[in-house]
Each structure stands twice: as structure tokens, then as C-alpha cells.
Image 1 (cartoon, rainbow, N blue to C red):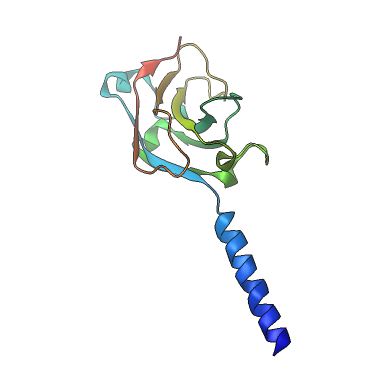
Image 2 (spheres, one colour):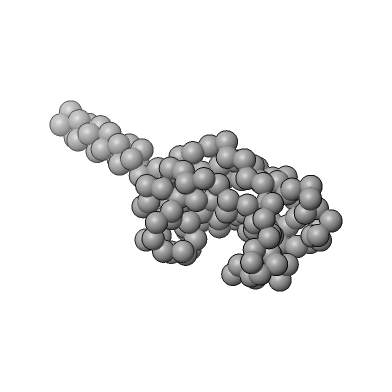
Length: 136
């Protein structure tokens, strides 16, 4: 009986820890402005990423697709972190960016196209990001 109670307590503790440790996420939809549609190729790379609103510029989570996949529903979460200590759940406020890279490179370059969310909290759903700005 004592052992059964210990197992139940351990199971409850584990459930509480895993519920608290659930990865943070942000989700929504990315589309391309009709004004830019003629300036991109269907095979151009699209990066959807989350960055800390304040702090390092390194992405906290990244998702990669192509222009032909737009519009696209996305979810960014802790499992997409580039480094274990740089996760969405470690920051109170983030910005989500969607960028069409003409070169296919991860670094933003002049001539790329981008759209940004407002500053949001991890856990935000239903974002609507329109790629509508030329990177200078």
C-alpha cells in the first residue's frame, strides 16, 4: 500500500512538472502581399521565425518553406529552438517575422521581402502576417 501511494505521488509530481514544462508556441498564418506577387519566384525561400522583442537577434524558433506554399498556417515552438537556452518559453515578449529570401540565405539582405507581427507573448495564436515590405 505504501509503495502504491509513492507511485501515485511520483506520477502526480511528474504530471505537474511536464504540464509546467510544456513548450511555448505562437501560431498563425503568413501570406504574401498581392503587390509583391510578381516580384518573387515560387521556389524562393520563406523563413518564418520568432525573435525576442528585447535582447539577442538570434531566432528563437525557425520554420522554412517556399513561396509556392503561401499562404501557410504555421506554429513555432520550443522544439524549433536553434540553441537549448534560446527558447520561446525563456522570453516574455517576442516578434514573429516572415521573410522571402531571394538568395535562400538565412541572413536578411537588402531586396528581401518581409512582414512582422506586433510584439506578442508566447502562447499567442491567430497571428496574421503579410509579407509586404522590402528589406533595405
